[in-house]
Length: 132
Image 1 (cartoon, rainbow, N blue to C red):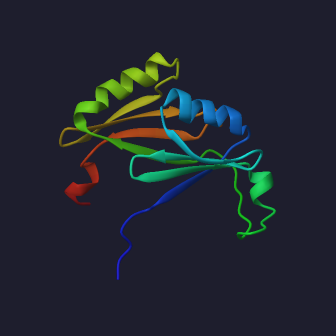
Image 2: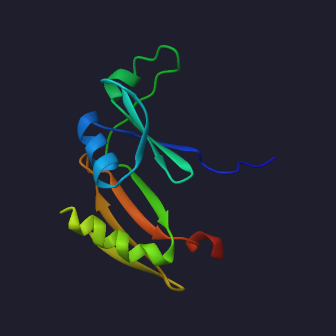
């Protein structure tokens, strides 16, 4: 038995409308689900990014309660050819690129923040396939 991949990643956000603007309008992720004042879900390549209002999701209901806070981290993978255009896109949005890191072997990534100060990273495809 093996896990194939992480299908969903969840962030807890203060303002769902602002998150929808950031991830949907600015980064271009397609909205695939939304419940007013509770959550907005996005398609991120083959994965799904869930943005929840923590006050609503901790109440539970149909599904078990869950919530969290603080500055979380997640990374988006792009092809090596699309890395620089993504970096330019993020900068053109007026979003500060905090750092670019050279992981060796020709692999780069850069870091920036969303409206909730979650640390986001864009990483070149193939970086983790080269082993530990």
